[in-house]
Image 1 (cartoon, one colour):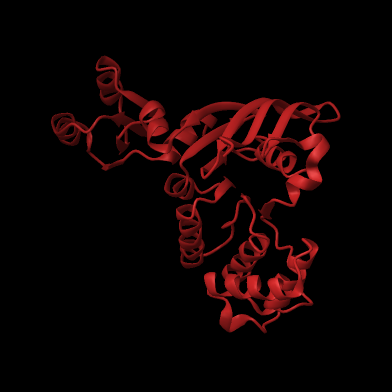
Image 2 (cartoon, one colour):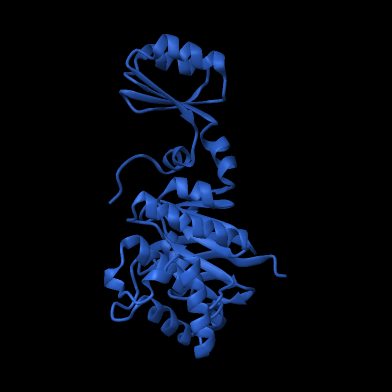
Length: 304
């Protein structure tokens, strides 16, 4: 079995004078759930569009299944599934017709297409909606149908471009359940998302981009340990005495003016001292998470 399903080497994507992706190199192993994170405009969507052959690379090398994307993009696309953020379902067809018709694009015979559609309807709990038109579906049901369609041809790689954007919490967790099951089956998946908890829960490994470049890569818990901490204290009403305290002790922190965020190891004595001396208005004690990492690496300012 090939070790890497995706391998990029110094890939670049330019639109005129604008460089969207600037020398990005990474690998995705077979059976891995790999996350690609970054703020809007970081270049992550440009990366995945190059991977599934929608957007040609400007320079560099990109192989999927060991095949060069430039010369074998048709063969590559026949072996992968893509679930895009936008709803691309056919509104004139029913739920099961969307699956069966899409299967025919992959030259799957009618009998097998019906069988695969039935399997996906059951897997995504859509059996009772099989005769419904797409416009009758809720956002969560439509997204599950998009996932089912992406899997209809039994792909070796599933690309997920912000698959739960705009969904309510219940629908999001239903999608996560299905992705967890696919992960157990060993399907290789590439995810882009703005939900840090989603990436932290689902992904084996993450790559964080900004301004077209890689700024960090690793397992979620390793990234949290490296760039944030296992324990975080948020303090409102921060004063100069607290600032002197954290500087004197070399505590990793973010100073946000009226609020400070302290990144510490789990230490009862330190937390008790901070609680006693500095929690005049309000303190929040919590575990460090991937959102801390993301904000520390990409900044807290608003992006256009």
